[in-house]
Image 1 (cartoon, helix red, strand yellow):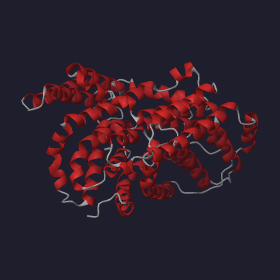
Image 2 (cartoon, rainbow, N blue to C red):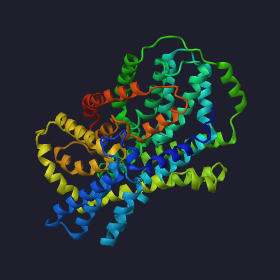
Image 3 (cartoon, helix red, strand yellow):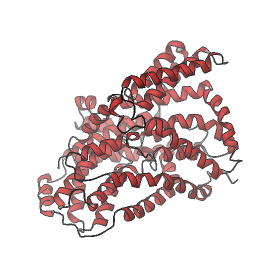
Image 4 (cartoon, rainbow, N blue to C red):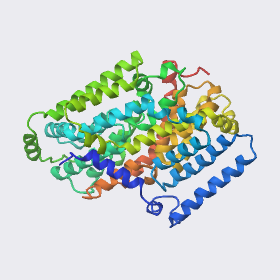
Length: 499
């Protein structure tokens, strides 16, 4: 029942999957008939060459043409997962700067954005929370005092995942923390391996960590990327609290419908027999709150107060980040070696790079050029907001089949934003629709955090995840329905056009 190294394990798994060769994904990819990494590189070269033919005789400048060609190659590399996600981002920045060094301020602006410093703060807090075992202590207390009923245990595990969502922004880190707890719980409670009860608890644990990813601004890194790309004139959308308020009604609908489906997929029956003596012994070994746990609590409070004040006084998240790390370093909970080895710098580089790349894409006007060629699709809606939401959702979902849940949101928002603005729809609603659609994945290869959850649970094989995947597939149309049902709520908030 040790969760001490969960965050570092998450880092290991993410890097491991990022560096996997293409043929290791073929078993779960639509390209399963292909069996060589070379095919992926041939596809990449073909896409780049096709883009070169399209822009060769166009009116685009050399800098913009070069950017489009290398961007097409990067999209293919991301879609086929031939290299770690940060490599295509580095390639785009290097080539663009070689061709046009004047673009350096825009390309590197992501590393000075508020979103970058907020995510950096969350990485530090997430590591300390797991190192201190504060969540582990909380979990043991809940299990010890919990009535032995399956439905209650499902809701508690779901709640623990939801509690982590706004604090630990990396989804793989949340499921890495939850999976060992679930495994130990199944062993100590005497639940039969791969039984309906075990599978139901796995579904609740996983979805608790994932379902609210789009409801909280800090629930997923892509949220922060799109938030950083929102036009500055949309002052009403600039805040963590606004995001939570606007997403609250969809979140309530999503929660209610999830538990209804959970009940239909996994019938509630039988009283659980939890080994509370074992839990009590483990609690006795923990004793009082440790210094690390107090420090973790202090850092969470510091972050929460900072986010709350920033929503009203609009100061930079750089101040929040410096304050959080000041607390962690001064108390000695986060050392120099831990700061170097346990913060996911590879992901942070990708995160800062993708913000700058998408801002550069907007500054070149390429997004407007692409939007002009897609404008006829928007005109089909004839100003009907319902049809427009359906269009954005379906296009985003289809794009996720190729790019996965990580890369698709920023690209889609960059392309769709200029062609949806004339319709009068709020930019935040466009962003939220894209995020909901890209989280509605179906195939395991689309989601790194599902692969992480599956790999961790495969050690003991206590659960069988086919039912979880089936339930997840049903969430695709359900999420679209939730967006449409939320339109009156957004109209009441004043962020929805009247026509």
